[in-house]
Image 1 (cartoon, rainbow, N blue to C red):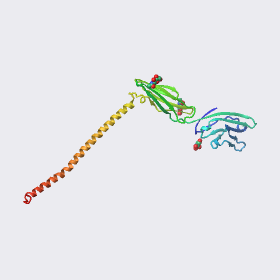
Image 2 (cartoon, rainbow, N blue to C red):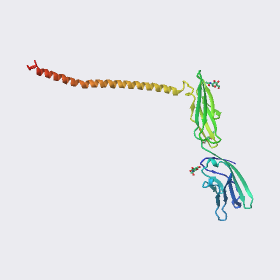
Image 3 (cartoon, rainbow, N blue to C red):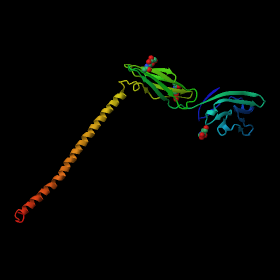
Image 4 (tube, rainbow, N blue to C red):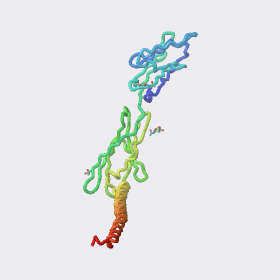
Amino acid sequence: KEVVAVLQESISFPLEIPSIEEVENFIWSSHIRLATVVPEKKGLPATIMVTNPRYQGRVSFLNPGYSLHINNLSWEDSGPYQARVNLRTSQIFTMQHYNLRAYRQLLEPRITVNFEISGEGSCNMSLICSVEKAGLDVTYSWISQEDSNDTGHEGSVLSTSWRPGDNAFSYTCRASNPISNISSHLIPAGPFCADPGYPSEKSSASFCLLAKALLFLLLLVTLVVGLWLIQSQARCKSPRMKKLRRNRMKLRKKGKPGPSLD
Ligand SMILES: *[C@@H]1O[C@H](CO)[C@@H](O)[C@H](O)[C@H]1NC(C)=O
Ligand SMILES: *[C@@H]1O[C@H](CO)[C@@H](O)[C@H](O)[C@H]1NC(C)=O
Ligand SMILES: *[C@@H]1O[C@H](CO)[C@@H](O)[C@H](O)[C@H]1NC(C)=O
């Protein structure tokens, strides 16, 4: 039986048994013996011996049926498991085999874009999709939004080309594993392939215009402030000059009648 689980979460292995009265013990193993469980009988409580220290404190055996339950799964828990049910009649009731595969919830895919622009303005692109710490059994697919149709492409690398006059498509990568799937954000081909119709360039052009306008405004403001400063300085000087002139006049008036000055 294939058992698929999520890392750091928990998992139970289902186990079918005859009536519990007939069971002598359960022996669980994975590579080596993991635990021995003797079910409760005639008022005696069940005895559980966990023999592999890696599982100590992480396993429990759930009633009814004493199926194995593992908490906080790690990569190392992946692999084969085996349950052996021994009957009191010293017969084996069942040998159950499992294969546990633990997977991580995938993180958002990372996209690498390589592009090459030829003389005629045509453009070859390769888009590479990857997921950090992805683990096993990850599949990638690319979806391109061409017009209104979505076209799929299997694999982590998408090669595409674009020529002037073509519509610029957008691409999304989706990564999946048996327990999760996640899509990247939308990657538009336009900005890489210098599509003149792509709005980001328009917005960058208008940004340039705005910057120029702001610079001009700043110059204008500096000019106005400068002029105002010069003018106010002139106004500050003029009363003093008037006073000086007045003083001189007074001196002259006083001096005129005095004979000593002549
Ligand atoms: C789960 O296991 C990891 C090591 O594999 C440990 O660091 C962490 O503390 C454990 N978490 C819980 C809730 O026991
Ligand atoms: C783009 O790829 C095509 C083949 O798919 C090739 O013929 C062409 O030369 C390439 N152009 C550039 C600019 O690499
Ligand atoms: C992706 O995962 C969601 C749950 O997260 C699930 O409902 C959906 O079916 C999955 N899609 C694919 C294509 O695997």
